[in-house]
Length: 353
Ligand SMILES: *Cc1c(COP(=O)(O)O)cnc(C)c1O
Image (cartoon, rainbow, N blue to C red; front, side):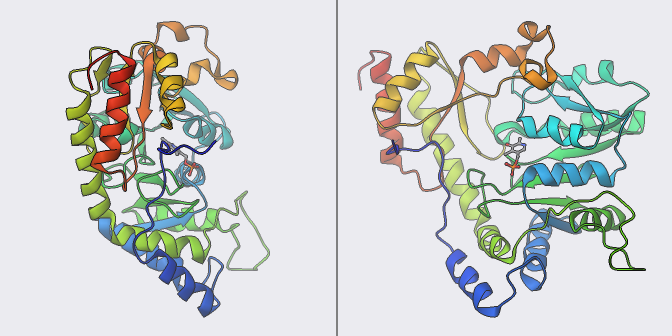
């Protein structure tokens, strides 16, 4: 059943169609040709970073970043418990092992618990800016400096948060702040890392002989049509972020005095508006019947079959995963839409409208 208020939908109100039409008309529809490079340059420039390497997904971006940094079998990567499975999988794809760190009260990795998980095998810390809340990057960069580790930021949910790690990885899936339908991009100031990621993305063809491949690589290329959509989205990113700040402010106001709802700390950019809720399962079912889609929080990595750890019930991440959810959050959501959503939540908790 399609929801009147889906949890997310893309906002394609700029020059997306114009650029796609132009791209198809021009004949360069693969990753070759100018579009992908235009998008890479535009997004890197927006972020004040020297190089962008566009690819097929956020998961691919994380994988390329780790491989470019030389992560492989025998290595360990520090990954948050409270995140999407792509973070752990990217590590596993390289042959390395993810080592999980619990979250703090803002859902981001608890920086005070990172050092106890560092071993001689640790190569990389992967902070994730959950739901658009920037991690404590200065403290993370200090730890990385002290232990000689590299930092791969997962910025899949945080377009608009300035990268500071060695590589920042973004997703362009349709539910993210900006989208290409599917896609991803890595940003870095290091030209060697950028070249390495581009090489691994495109099957590692070599200069000596086109069909000599010295490394196990990938086809993680982005098409020109995806880049055309992404470029039009970058042009509007400031407007999109401003619209989302308003959405955050309106939800804060509409929900702040509902006893069953606990608000979460403010976000640096709004990806999804998250709350904790009493009787979460009943609330989600009630809202679904009213045409409002919601999504529950991540399940901690240590609860996943592939990474099971019997200690998961003691995690803070686990407590959040039991009562957290997010509400419809998309750029075109209006004040009236939000009033309806918050009104139905009030009704569920038997409060006056
Ligand atoms: C969406 C997301 C990803 C994966 O991105 P895809 O483009 O779907 O591969 C990775 N990490 C986080 C935190 C995400 O939200």
